Length: 366
Image 1 (spheres, one colour):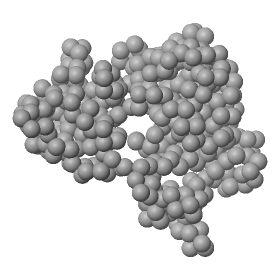
Image 2 (cartoon, rainbow, N blue to C red; image 1 turned 90 degrees about the horizontal axis):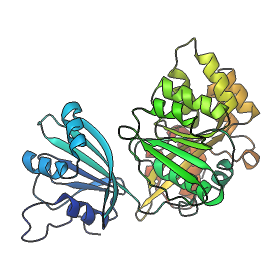
Image 3 (cartoon, rainbow, N blue to C red; image 1 turned 30 degrees about the vertical axis):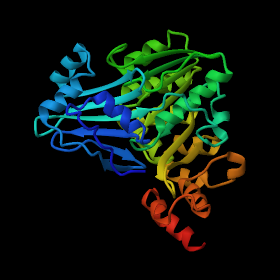
Image 4 (cartoon, rainbow, N blue to C red; image 1 turned 90 degrees about the vertical axis):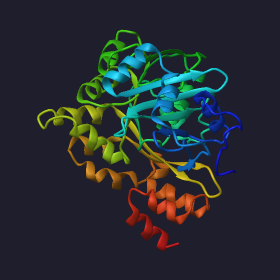
């Protein structure tokens, strides 16, 4: 693959739609536009320059504003931040973020969203995912850092329900990324800022909309997390995301959102309603591309008791026991397996590990 994309000869005006179309052809996941720099794309987790002139402030503002409606322009000018998703006919769907830089210019980050909803088979997801989405109620969390593929995993899980169950699925996102087509299930997709004001408000009223499944794009605050736990307790299957990098860390993050007086109640609710935590990372694959690693914690009576008794630090050890029966995995085990199959490099395995010392010890025994 060429390192750079070259501007068409004679084309002195940079068209953002043509730019987005061209970077898609290179299999890029992201496009970054910043004043004073050439456009850059991300391929296999690395940023690469595009062979265009450096962007000026006025040129970038013209390009950025060409994709916005008047309401969005007003919002951006007032808040200096804007999240939105956009369909560009004949090109594809993108998630975008606009922001201001110290140069008083606009910065833009575009994430490419696949046109087709991925299936669990396409995604090569662990087989236990198919079992988890058959649950009638409870809370399933998909966690990981930004860019770890959480949205793709959730889209594939909802697609599995859509293809096999007759359910009403409500999604609450900021912005909506994957747009689902009704198959056996019925989708009601809502976007914070355009079709609802807040995650918490949408989640509160969703319980009156006869849902079977609810997706919360991000569990950001106490009100949203509390409403999600209530929905999971009252007979709904709830999916949510958090920016955490391990299953035990996810549980601690949820509990720590609440003050100390409320924490015993939250631990009890989690112990009762938490079905699973899937913590994932995308790692560069040998020879190009990326591979997803999944740390999977599935709540059983032992783990529920550890949550209830405020012994979250013991959950990791519990995840390592009887894994053939429990279907749980740790990230260290997944990384070691990928190393043995020569799918990832030793350097990247250690770099992306949540427990590098543990992984190095296991690698040393190879």
